[in-house]
Amino acid sequence: MDTASHDTDEHTIIPRLDRCVVLVGLMGAGKSSIGKRLAKALDVPFVDSDEEIVKAAGCSISNIFEVYGEAMFRDLERRVLNRLLTEEKASVIATGGGAFIQDATRALIKEKAVSVWLKADLDVLHERVSRKNNRPLLEKGDKREILAKLMADRDPFYAQADLAISSDMGAHENVVSRAIASLLPHFPQEKA
Image 1: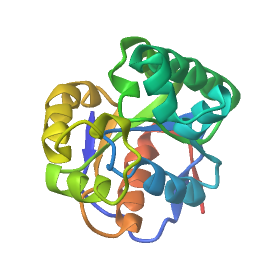
Image 2 (image 1 turned 45 degrees about the horizontal axis):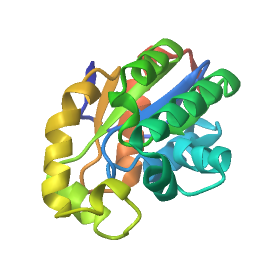
Image 3 (image 1 turned 30 degrees about the vertical axis):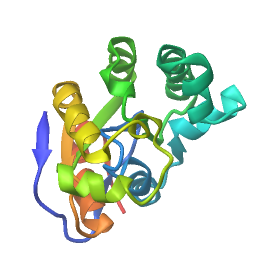
């Protein structure tokens, strides 16, 4: 796994995607907000897998968890990601925080895409997720404690991603620049 810590100047060379880039990491790491900007910079579509799951299920993720449970949600998540990775030839896909910890889903992503772990420290994650109350896994207790446990449990799985990029506080554009620089070796390149 490569870990990028440098910024690029102007994007004079960008990767030409021939497969999807899949963003993984904990809730609050910036998979959707960074993903949209990264997709724009790469001139490819952005897809939020959670939004696609909601469309497929016809109800919210909270409702899926409440009515059917996490196991059913994870199965639906894997099937939706399989469809996206098959249909979307070149796009940036943001996954839910638990997607990459599932063996079958992780294997699917590793086979069909380049995975990028967006990493942030606990304080940053806590501040970000505290802005909204739309995280089913955080509804039953202290958000900070739950996030700390999720980090301990999930980071070893996220560490299996092809790339790791810090998404701590700072301008999103800096994270996008680091992501592009890290992606260059994984894709053909072209002048911007």
